[in-house]
Image (cartoon, rainbow, N blue to C red; front, top):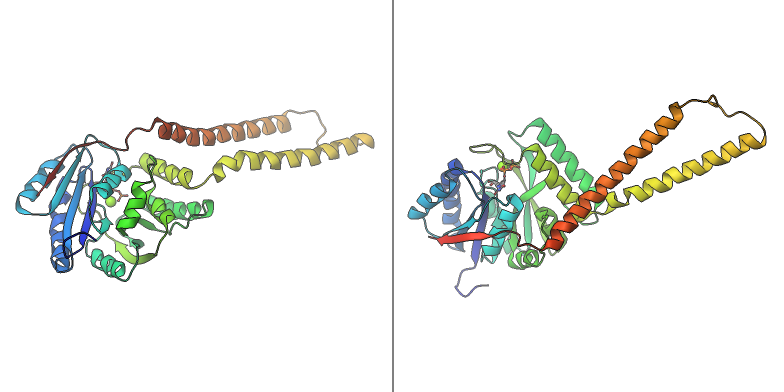
Length: 318
Ligand code: UDP
Ligand code: MG
């Protein structure tokens, strides 16, 4: 706990080109903050992730008439997960909420989070009961992704939960000590452990603007999640190799058998069909295995370089 009588509640929000959402977001946060003010000292940490629209100006103009806002300007666009990480590191709360800035995560849920935190939970994460206004493609792929990653890792990552959550100070400290670059925060928080609980909610439609997660970024994020929490894909080549060798061994026995008894195996007619199928198939498997290796190796390379996760150009407070 900090020195003042009330604990500090921080709300960290990464923002990338959300000019039209800043005002409405802060309006709704202000209402929630008003209700929590008796219990908490509240700060809102807005991370401007190298926005190229009017986000910075929008935040500055809001800061003129609101207090307790911390504006963190990153030196360029570092991406959602790193901007969120910056927000968590700057936030000084005893409890810290991470949320999106497009009002898809309803700020009112923070009150429920806080209640659970008071009951002794270290992590209160929001599970999406429904997602309004998302494309069918996103719904289907997101649903499938959470189920696939669950099968691939021993860390129990909850289904259908995003990064909207409250974390206690010790959880955030644990994240600070995890310097990995290809961050899959929702998985890292699960990995930390302590007491975690879920709260269900209906995800709203984006208030203004468009998603900052096009399909390519979504795919990369999914790959980050899988590679940082599972080495099963890496073992795919060896599992597959064993399986193919076993089949080849049995096949060899059959061929020898036919030879010994001077029989002609079925499909003996000299032809290239079976050969070419086997060559293409194995070629495909080999390239795929190389690709999987590459996905991991590329990430190892990035980690080894040890560059800072993000750079802050300045911090302004109101
Ligand atoms: N965001 C960010 N940097 C980026 C991309 C996104 O800070 O490079 C922020 C964005 O402004 C929003 C949050 O991350 O507050 C989630 O992004 P978005 O709403 O576009 O993702 P979606 O909800 O469509 O998955
Ligand atoms: Mg969104």
